[in-house]
Length: 329
Image 1 (tube, rainbow, N blue to C red):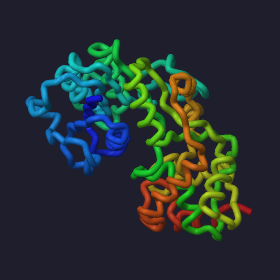
Image 2 (image 1 turned 180 degrees about the vertical axis):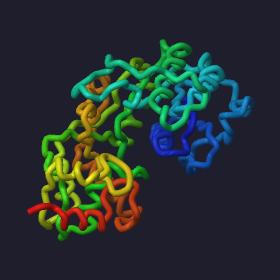
Image 3 (image 1 turned 30 degrees about the vertical axis):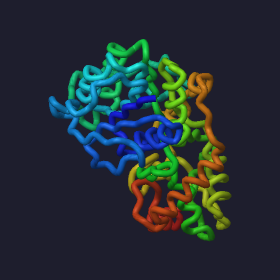
Image 4 (image 1 turned 90 degrees about the vertical axis):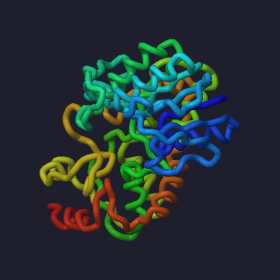
């Protein structure tokens, strides 16, 4: 296939390009080229998508598959105007943030969406509204050839958000020291491996599949996740359980950000955040590698980055020690 990736130098786009090239496809990436190197064998057309002439250097040809990952509606609309009529299949990678609410475990693709923004250039706080606007624009132009993948938390090798790898990295960093764990064993966690997501998106394009799907990982109870990260990370020290209410009283950051409890979210109204139905995508061929294999490869990536580095998600050693020492008897 002749594949056009709008992006391709950042994480998911580069993974799509890498796998597409391995399958024997031809890949052209349209991006500024500032987020990283393109996959070996791909062609980069360096351009600023905010410019009126952004796509002038792109060959005027038909494309078997186009992949779009941007969340800026203006970029999405511009690409649709330039390539929509010449694309056999189109993939728009959206987000679970497109949904209006997150309070219902098991909610599927029929859940109510946010109101779309009317802006071409949205602020980060309008991310979900911008994704909805981009979905609507995609449907309008290529709706009969379109896959919309509302991705959940993405993890695996190449992840720089530090969220999905935080716990296994912690287990490996100090395997004999006490590990602070929220006493919420039934709380859901979910993460999709970037490699599984990319492979499925390519399969959809190859097979001409269309539709809207929650592209989310398997739901794993928090207690099982901790057991698995300890096994993979080699943690043999004691586990120190901290009550949910106490952690909330300490105002420990949840889910993401520095000194957070990664993948842990107890805020009311978010009961379905990590527990959204992925049944439609599974029925459409999405497969997930085992959680153990995911963590083994994620830990290898974390070691490559450095287990002792400052993190964008997960507790720092100092914060974890402080919490353990202040935990009531």
